[in-house]
Length: 388
Ligand code: CTP
Image (cartoon, rainbow, N blue to C red):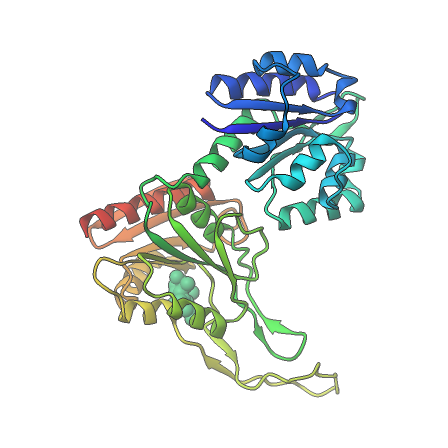
């Protein structure tokens, strides 16, 4: 059961927020509706209060202070902009500033408004502050327009809310455990503005961090140039280069679980130019030196009971065998094998298909969203932890 503040702003999708209230009440949550004047043009505040089984005259302020989560559905372009810039000119935006827990918003607007750079900049601001967005989704809008702008379905919003609440719960299979996850791809400077990098987005590592959080772990995320937002609730340490990742990982090598999902550069330029190198028509030869293999370094100093997970991004035939050999060579308890030759999975994709290798065997995880793959990996981690 959670205390949910439900903001409803002015849009035709406000009628769908009625279904959302029903779903939340049915799931046992205590819902306090905050209905803007704009929303009242579509559905009256009384309707929401009746569905939430609350009397409208009750003072909302005590609830604002002790709410577990703020949900705003639908969220108009206007209120989205007000939230992004910290305005507080009605009860809802005041509540948003006063609230300290997670925030989930379901934007709904005309597709052209959604695509507008002003809206997208506001969305980026909210995301950077850890606000979770669900939707908007593609579909036909009330005005007959087709495009991305429709509010996500109430069922989907309710499901995301449960995920968010689970993430904040201390109990869970990994409660009391420290988990260190590296994610993304390092960039090795060749001069002041250029680098050698890779295509890793950090999605898989971030999914692992979210899943570990949902299981109650204390999670530190070493982020190497993430192109997806880091989840709120994890301790984010920026590690843009292999050297920084090595330093920060080794400083936290005592974690109960370490998952090396980052694509760490194997080589870096020996002597990067301090300034931006100007072109002079001559060839530019770079000398590269090997970096430390962080996973192997962690494997060499692994303590009893600790679980160390590596990834093996392999290309072409014989990949599984090479991954198995990598597990032994680097001292990892689990190695997650994926075939980077396939364009539909792995690098920068939403989905992944992996084989989890351990000393006791292998488990194939069919193609699924990265969060589900993360869950399968952490199931294996939990199994090893319980075996001590
Ligand atoms: N890794 C690491 N430090 C490095 C390179 C890789 O910790 N300098 C880790 C990765 O985070 C991953 C695992 O090692 O968990 C496997 O990385 P991968 O690039 O697949 O393998 P390599 O060891 O680089 O082997 P090769 O490139 O020869 O296949």
